[in-house]
Every structure is written in C-alpha cells, then in structure tokens.
Length: 287
Image (cartoon, rainbow, N blue to C red):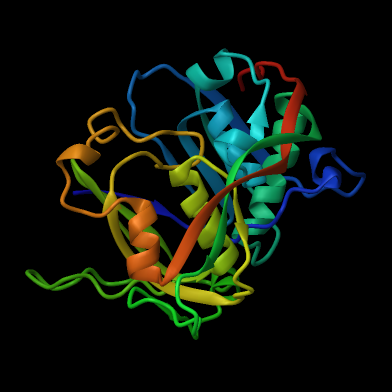
C-alpha cells in the first residue's frame, strides 16, 4: 500500500487580499524553480526544516496547495499549467515558520516568478450541506476529539521519530493526514485535523463544495475507509489504477462512510460558491 502524507493541513478561506502581493508579503530568502521532465507520475510536497520543497508538481497543483483550494475553485488556467512539471526548493531564515507561514511565502513566489494574477467570482454549482445524522448529535465511532495542538507542534523543532519495531504497526498518527491508496479503496488516517480541514478533504474527494451546518469546531482524530472514487492530493487526481475501481470494492462509498463512520450526513443542494479565476500567468524563467 502506497502512502501519501499530507502534512500541516491548516485550511482557511482565501481572501481577496491573499491574491496580491502586499508591501510586506512574506517571502522566501532563496528559491529555485526548475522544469522536471522525468516523465514520472509521483509527486512530492513538504516542509523540511527552514524551507519548502515541491517535486514534479504542475503549476495547477502548486496554486491549489498554496491557496488551499479545491479543483472546482480554480478556473481559467492554461493547459500547460496542468501538464508541465516543476521542482521547487525554497529556504527561509524566519525562525519557527509554520506550514501556513511557508504557504504564504509560496503564494508570493507564485506571484513573483509565475506572474500569477487571480480574482474572485461567485459561480452557482451543486454542493452538499453537512449535518448530523442523529437527532442527539452524537458522532460516529471513527471520529474523536484531539487534545494535541498540532499548529503549535508544527512551529516547534521536531526530533526524528524511531521506526516501529519489525512486525509492529506504526503508532497512531497524532498530527497530519495519511491516505493509504489500495486498488479499490482508500484508508484515511488523520490526527489532530481541524474540522474545517476535514470538510475540505471530504469535498476534494467528492468533487463538490461542502457547507458545514454542524457547528463543530476544534481538531479531531479520524480514521475512515471508503471506495476509491477519486481524490488524491490537491491538484493531482488519483492514479488511473485507483480511479473508477469502486465497483470492485467492499468498502462503503464516501457518502455512506461519512454517515456510518462519522455520524454525519451529506445533503445535496445548489448555491453560489466563491471561485478563483486566473487573469494571467507565465512560465517561470529557469534558475
């Protein structure tokens, strides 16, 4: 089973102010952008100490990561932005810069090096409303409140963790998100994930916006199993071997898993949804 680790998921709405570079916009001290013509499908994105790295990622995926968007929220990018791949290596001297801090620096990098310009519009589209499945508002067996402040932990220096002993399962995930991709299903293991982040992760796999009507706040530990209908990393769909495999899976659909495992329910509807429309973007000069 291959694992995609998505770290530092602390998601907030994209404001109009975030789409332009202000006078004091945070930025990396040094950054390198190079085309990747390896032909590989595997991508990488992470926050090593004092920096950010992206490997073999298209610009579309970088924008979606930087601004924490869904596929349906980003419109009007040219074809090359989804097909051409890039390697990004950036460093900062800002002490204890969190993952969110470095994403803000990535936004500045995209504006300066790719000349990215966007504006926000409202578009009507299908969506889901998230509500409690039970009248007593009790959550399901696969979601429990977390007592760990993962945002504070992301700012603190981290000692390398020892691997599990041979034959032993890995310890429970305390902070972060792991998606185990198998031929017919996905196992989602999230530790200390903000409820807003969980909603965005579910929306990414469903391909529709989700409006939260539960009133839940805080961070949660979540473990789910559902059919591999789609999803993957932002801006990057699942490999072809996984997409469309749900007919062969014994796992529940994601809609059913939300109700059975989380104690929540998704109701269909339509509404005006904010989207980001790209006005202009250029290929970067190689350095």
